[in-house]
Length: 453
Image 1 (cartoon, rainbow, N blue to C red):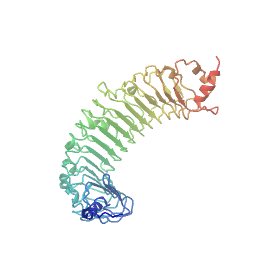
Image 2: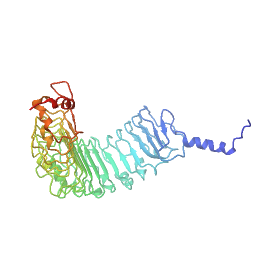
Image 3: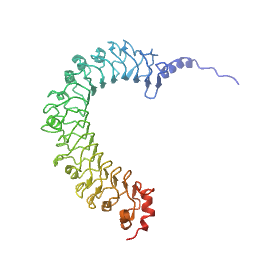
Image 4: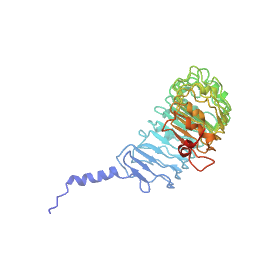
């Protein structure tokens, strides 16, 4: 068979195609051309490998968890970067021309967990930078000129180290900032104008593991567009200090709030006028009680989810019981021992109730009478020895978890189920009999019909 000659243009295009789709970094780095991106993660690299130039633009390059100490000039020459991850190395210096060739294309830079003591001048040349992650570097302050140079598009920054002993004044130039994460700083208070430069744009604020005692009176006031607030591990911060920081208007734009491991004994009143609030999450806080008026008449009709885990609550708070909009309530690993008839009296839309891992031993027979929407109940790992009769008060229950409970299966204890005429056919109970080796559902199906009286 006669061979066809290879067109001359194939010899011209082939090297170009190879260069377009060849990984610019040598093995063991790996590349994907879908985005495109290069992964050089956890390879014990001590320097940036030599790059094979590629016309393919918009690269995401990840050098996480190596031993890079110095980023030289032209380190990424030959590739057009969009995102660059240099986190968890030992970087001490970055030369002025380190990002040459990509100074107008880099939008995201992560350099968390290194040894930078000051912001490199090279950062100030990234004119289109949108996100900058600086946490866990021993930075003592932020160069104001560099911060001014990167302020045009920067919407996200995270920072923090024990060496940072005062609020970095360079943040005042970040007038478009929408997300701010502060972690492991040493200062114990915030200036009154800490957030003033970006009060019109800030939507997300997270403060982690700081010694903050006060946020300064009204420092968070006027954050009308703040949608999500997370406070975690700030063990010197009191509910009163948080309240003071939001006076007099509260945080009316809040959608989600998380408090974790701050040592709070009650929740701060930051929900005033929060008409769009959807969820509150409280984890590992020694909360004993909540103010009966925590949720006011101006409170959000959008509020659907309240999660409280590992608190010291001994009862369902009255301020919670009256919130009509909540569809999911979780109070787990706390000190609740009894469920009364009025504990959920105002929760007409409650769909899921999780009270697992509380020392609950009794549930009132009159509980849940007004909770017509309630379908899913979780009482796992409590001290209940029987199936609560109050589930008969529900219109259409679908699931009850009693897993890990010491349920005593006997006609005296569970025989009432035989006369529960409105029990839905598809209603499932998860758990085991503590006194006989059988599942609850099997016992109900096979033994309850034999009960007399």
